[in-house]
Image 1 (cartoon, rainbow, N blue to C red):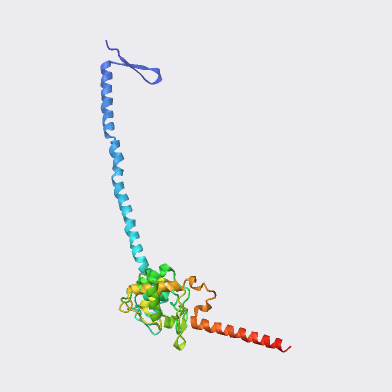
Image 2 (cartoon, rainbow, N blue to C red):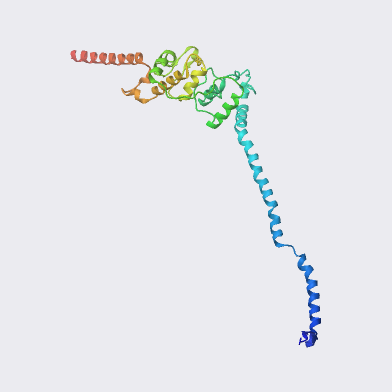
Length: 288
């Protein structure tokens, strides 16, 4: 037989409930609590809901920087070359390389000419002079490349040659016929007319020698591919590199590599001086 349920009230009083009433009260409490439990949000959707937009936001933020960074990387060399040209070249050669009163036009000179003049320190000029001389370059290698690229946009002219090893024998023959009359048989340089000089070749790099052959700086004539092929230019460069070697001076003091005529003249002067000194010494002893 069911026992009546007992619940405790305030101040120690006890109230007995009939089992059926207890069941009724429990049902009412369950119905009252049911809507509150059903109203609670499902933990799985709450966790996955923020994760869905997160990849979209992350993808947008990740894809944006590459497009922003790629543009300056492509245009930076061109912008640097244009900036250098405006700062150091435009005052003499014009904003677009069209030339001005102080400098010739650069349209059609080509990258080879610009690279030669700038890499040998002949340009930019610190002061006007009849013939620019070789000096330390003003620009770094990266700045020279940027400047050459900008002037190359003016159009025309020979490109920077690609130098490869050639034949020393063929190079010596070509050098003797086309280069030695001005630069000397040993590449030591010589004085020309009106105060100009053919500079020595000992400090020139292989690329600079090939560039000079193609563009003809100063009073030097131009040797296009119709006159000297690329292979012949490589032969000349190889021979000039041989002249720059110290192995040619095994006999002693090179005397500036002025050639056999000058060396022979020095030898005769020295020998005649010794003979005169010896004759005077012997004459003095005979008179005692």
